[in-house]
Image (cartoon, rainbow, N blue to C red; front, side, top):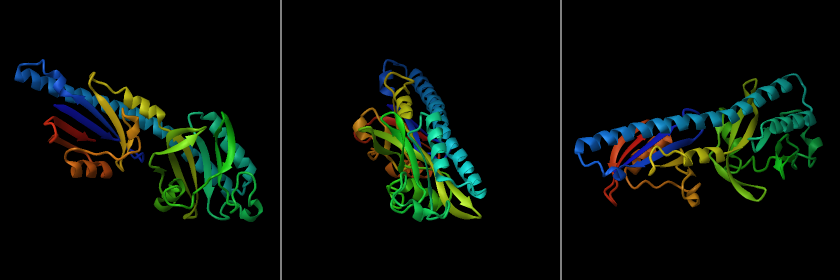
Length: 288
């Protein structure tokens, strides 16, 4: 028998923690009552462990989101007071990145001519693309902060960091994705905060952050020696798994697929007992 517990993080971050403990390893408990007691204790312990780690992960994510919120407020204040020097903002983004070394990048993106009305004067300039829009991105290159323009921000998928908060008009955590940094594929997410002025969307402020610490935390979730833990997104993709080849791949449940997938997608609480039809192992699944 096995115990499976997951917990939905209570914020915009689309990730869910699943911890698993194998009850079969307790077969040394001969007496039925003793086994039931041990199983319930394992359920309680695994659930408590999952909740504790999920809270730590939530705080990790909220740290990055807080930085993006502060950035959005500061940019709006500058815009409202006509302090729209692009070079000044670029340096502020650089300073913010260097003060928060856990981040991969700091950035902002604005609608055409929404920042200062001078897009035409900045076409092809450093930190700008051929549109001249104000889209500075500060990130790490060979250990140093470097300025480049955002790319792909007008495309669905590649540009979700901009398009999702623009469409939702809400703070958004972007579905985790792999991105090459200094030649290494890094799993990361973006915290993006829309900027509104007079009720109109004008831009986005955001940060990119790695998920390596969350992956490390998941790997240490072992209330029992046989335990394993996975982190998945609410779109059903692995963020962490003991088999690294499965990272970003779709989760396949061998049982109660519809119920589990629906609960994960909607962020609803769910607790069910299930049996794996392939080997007869028993699971208790909880999504919180």
